[in-house]
Image 1 (cartoon, rainbow, N blue to C red):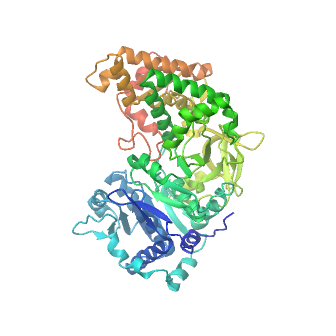
Image 2 (cartoon, rainbow, N blue to C red):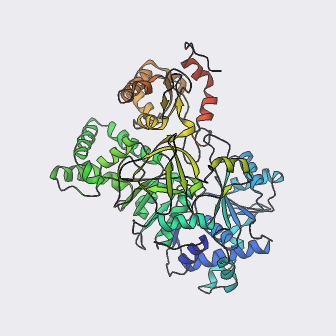
Length: 596
């Protein structure tokens, strides 16, 4: 177990080593370049000294608006080392959205990645208290302060340490505020989650106990560092001596996997779903390949239990399926992954079973920004499919009378920034944090999270429907990119389906369907019939009150940029309900029920 008091202990843990490849990053030619432990120390020190020279004091806020890159980590550690508070902001947000967060947090410095991000901040500068904008990219603007100029000759300092700088970092206490992370706002307006050094450090200390990470491990940091999950994992793996490779562009991930060949792969469920859909899509292009995949999956299903136990089947037929199919799926991840982990949202059971059938056991975990984040995780030695594992050692949990999971412990946040009422509402009278998730424990202590409390649909007959498990069943089909259940306070549930258009268009071409627009495509009778079959298949596995009586295939591809998904790829259900209000009304036009 790691014994960390503050996040600065993590910084010193990394920089006290002699690693030449503490971090990796890609240059303009997409070649991987190392950052050594000594270089990391000197760059953090140089940037921290610059912040101090600009009058930044303990507790002042510094915004980080950037994709995953080594400069992100340097800025993070520099702010923390001098006792400042960093405020990570998703680079996908608009200028107007960024203005709200900068103004609310009172940031005095904004460190941004690209000229595009620089221009966003510059355009709303008058609405904020930002005094300096620092640009990571070398493409400057007349008024830009370049990140590289602040590091000066940092690398030339070698391995010398600065006792004054170190002393300041050591003086930071566990109770000092480390970061303000704004929630993505799936059901409410964004709130700034205040996490102390001790909150995150205590969680990192226990989260990886049973994994045995060491200096031979590596992982590709591609999940947004603006989210606590990726940041936590960077801290934890780096503490154990692993190499962290930064992938700033999701489109580069496939090539990064084959080059870096990581031993750890962590992703949100949507990434796993898309990988599964791509495998099935490619197989569907050839009848022979489709039959081969179906055969291999049937073999894998018979040996699923071995995979879930972390064992390799000795069966000759499984070995043949592994050689022909399973090994190729693993090779897409680089071929060296020991641990596949999923977090950030519920992993559909169908997806978990499919990957188990191709020889990949996904270790699902669960947590919230407010809990730094990890509450529970499946580990190599303690695993149960469908669950999110057992709780980490220093977290207390209980289930309230209405099924809500309550949490208490040193990783639980201090409150929401400048929102006393929201903070008060988040805790009960005994100061248990109310997660907002509906959950249960089984007899062996494994935790199962079924849905968000606020997202449960209640039919007019009083039945509660959990949308996420049903949506995950629908998304298991390669033709469905996203699904959103609706029908709260109505007699029955309905669903909006956003297609996987690349797959649907291939299917349409193969079946001679001509359409000039996506709207024409999704309304074509054969396409409607196709998706009706998908809905019927899912309905066959549901209780009668859960079945989806009506559906609509929308002509839209939901995304972060268009506003239907959060940066962690969760549905913004309220946004969808507002956007498709007339379509949803049509579902229930003949329903003789008042909803006032």
